Structures are given as structure tokens and as C-alpha cells.
Image (tube, rainbow, N blue to C red):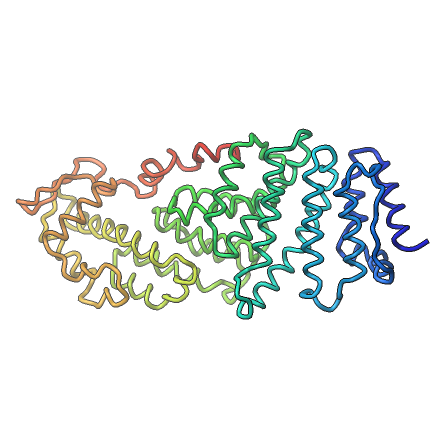
Length: 448
């Protein structure tokens, strides 16, 4: 009895099990993990491939193709070359996706295809990165995988009469978003999110790890769209729901990399020391961006343009590589301006008006005649005239960061009698968010 005959017999015994036991048992037989399926992998590699048929009385031909290609892969693969073997892995995944789309028995492939994806995806990523300079088409294997996974996603979305396939839809969506971000097309995630929001899914049904991945990529998607309040709330949820009691976690660092600058921009003024002490075991393990954002927070609190621009210059490459540089520079300018006006107002004894001349002197002190425009940010601040003061105050008042009325002819800003400077975070959550902090937008409420 050959190893192929043994495989066929094992599968035939498996499909006679109670229906709810078949998916897991099948995934163990068709596992691509040599650590768990070592004996079968070795024995099959010594045989010659041949067609495997007859399963489910040949009423599920796509499954026959899966088993045939599974045998072919172990017989023909080169264990020393992922590149030479990848086409076999890619074809097997495609055949599994085809079997998964079967309306009657496709759900039996649920666990198998999930494990295959997590085996093949790292291979595709490594190959595409290592061969990036040698291939004319960028990311060919990841692009291929995205097309296969999108078929799986759409099949679950439109054709899941038993509701059993939906148990992996969050997993599939996460892997698609991972690929889209990796290949530089994060806006393609829009299709995933818009469909997920309309499926009436039970959020609690899914593993916490899958929930974390989903909301992490959703937060990054909102960041790209400059929906900063939505992005902040999802990043914060991810941080709060990470495992407790561990230090130096890569996943926590990935979250903080975006959470901290967004928190700064929307006025939350994060406690950087708390992050350093809570999530890192020593000063040496703290990532450089933590100290960068700590310096930026201090510059904003002090309303010091010179200090802020020096920080941007010193950390230019770091911030640029994080794709946060321009957003941070533009948004923090308005925060520093607001804080500078508030400091001036407090220094003058909280008057009911501010003269343009007083505002000019405050900006001159903050800028300190430095070359604040050296890297191209807000160069007009070094020569702020009455027109610039008028435009600045208009922006602050329109965004409800200062309450008052401008009288340009009198070169005066009349201030409100109460709450002249509303809290920045409160303004952002109520005016540009979804109400009080913690409230998700209407499309995301299924995740509550």
C-alpha cells in the first residue's frame, strides 16, 4: 500500500465522521506544516504523483483536485528552494479556494484554507521582497494571493447558507488588508470594510487576536483618510486590549507609532513617560519615536515654534518614513498657535480682547527670529502681518479653538466672556468625531 493509498484511505475515513468534526480532521490530514505532518510529507515525497478521485462519490470534484495537487506538491516540491516550489503552493491555494466556493460542502475546507493561507502568505512576502529589484512587476505573488483571497471573501459574503464560512471572514479580511498595506495600496481596504459593515456579523464571535488585527488596519485606513478621531479610537482600543503584563512587544510598538502622534494632533496630550514605563523594560528598549514625540509634546505645551521646528528637523527622516511628517507639521501649527494665544491671554490678565500688535509680539517671541521655515513649514510665520493675524484668528475661531470675533479695521479680537479657549480634544470629538469620546461612527458600531 503506497503512501498515496494511505492518504486516500485516511481522507475517506475522515469524511465519514460527524459533519462538525470533518473540518478539523481534514485540516490535520492536508496540513502543509512539516512539523505536524512530517511523516506524511516524507513518505509522499518518495512516491510518484497521480490523480486522486472518488471522494464524496465524485460529487465534489474540486476537492479531488485539492487532494491531487496536495500529493503533487509533496512529490515534486524542492525542500531547499521556496522559489522553485512556490507555484505549487500558489496553485494548491487556488484549488482550495475553488473547493471552498462549493455551496454544499465548501465549508468543510474552512480550517484547511485558513492554515494554507498562513503558510503561503509569508513565503509570498519573503519572495516578493527579496526579488523586488529583479522582477519587472512589483509584488507579483502577493498580488496573486490578494486575488485568490478576494474570491474567498466574496464567496463568504454572498454564498454562505450555513453561516459556517463566516467564522473565517474576519481572518480573510485581515489578510487582505495586510497584503494591501504591504503592496502600497491601502485604500483597497475600503472594499473590505464597506462589505463587513453590511453583513450583520456578531463581533464577539471572533478571536480577540483577529479583532485586534482588524481594528488596527481599520485605524490605519482612517489615518490615511485623515479621519483622525476615528483612527485614534480604534488605535486606543487596540492598545487597551493588548495582552497585559508583557514588555517590549512589537505589536504595542506598532500601535504606539501611530497612536501617539494622532493623540497629539487631536489634543489628548499623551503621557509619554507612562508609555515608556508601562510597555518597555529599559531605556535601551524604548523606540526612538517615543522620545521624538515627547519633545514635540513639550514644544506644543510651551507654545514654542522654534523648539517644534527644530524637533521636526532633527527627526525628519524618522517622521517621513512613518508617513506622519506633513500631517504632524500642519496640524500642530494650529495647536501651538492656540496655546500661544492662551499663554498671552493669561499673561495679560485674561482681558476681553487681544490687539493684533500683542499677538504679533507673542509670535515673534515664540519664533525667536529663527529660521523656522528651513524645511518648508509655515514660512509666513516669520513675517506675520495684520493679514496673517486675521487669517490665523479666522482659522482658530472657525475650528472653535478660540471663541471670539475679529475686528480687522480696529486690529482687535474681541474674546468670549466664558470658555475663551475650549479644550482641544473636546472640540475634536464633538465637532469632527461622533460625540463624546469612545463613541464609534455609525458604520463601526457593530464592533461595540
